[in-house]
Length: 225
Image 1 (cartoon, rainbow, N blue to C red):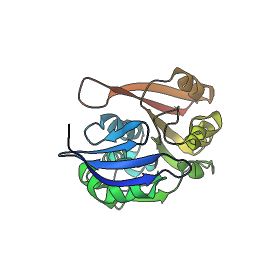
Image 2: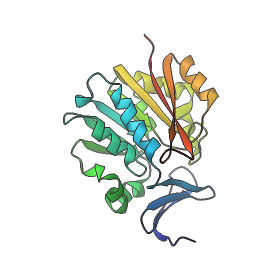
Image 3: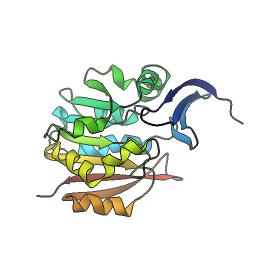
């Protein structure tokens, strides 16, 4: 059995689930109470793709304005920073304060310390608070706040995957903007819901690590013209 050291734990606001950060010999993992491993520094290719693929669809990624829902282990943030230019601005919304602190410490080493990048701004709170303004502020909105449309961490995330949440997100995009969602599994109902909200949708199946094993789902959506 692998030896792991508990580095920290945090209660998810709005619920009774607890996140725990563990340090292994060469990696870190975050587990959620009652559900097991939530994410790992060994398997983050789909998180990388969430940030990179969305930005690659932009006409001018060098000056993109990006909103990321969910800091996680920092890999999506790092991918966005790598896919955009010096004039870009990236807001990452994180609900759990301890997750931000973990990324300033041991997790940051695995993702390249993206919180240290001057283009990064952290919003400590629910990303839905920013989306409810529904003003065209972002070129990319990348959402990875839970396990997917079926909320695992907290039921409060369900709004993001509702028709109202999707509409608010799409109305927060600038012209030509991209809305991206990450999910642990495919979800045909959610795919149809995106289309019913007036979006053109591409579904990607991405390996979590390497070229075999578990795959995750990414939806890339834009307003139909």
